[in-house]
Image (cartoon, rainbow, N blue to C red; front, side, top):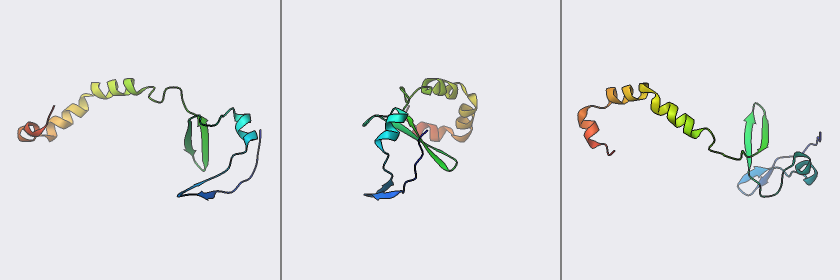
Length: 88
């Protein structure tokens, strides 16, 4: 495990840190490879981006489509005049 202390610096309109090559090599990161940034409490975690960033979307959409609660809410909230204005 590699440990170092660095300082957050201004980088144009953003802020950032410089990550030494040794740290990137130890973690198995390469230049121009997508990564995910996560905030976990007071830590910022950098991970390799998942192979499929949309993994699970189809299942989530199916769950939402199967949820009759949304349909009931829409039907209760929209009167026939409001529905006539909608384009389906």
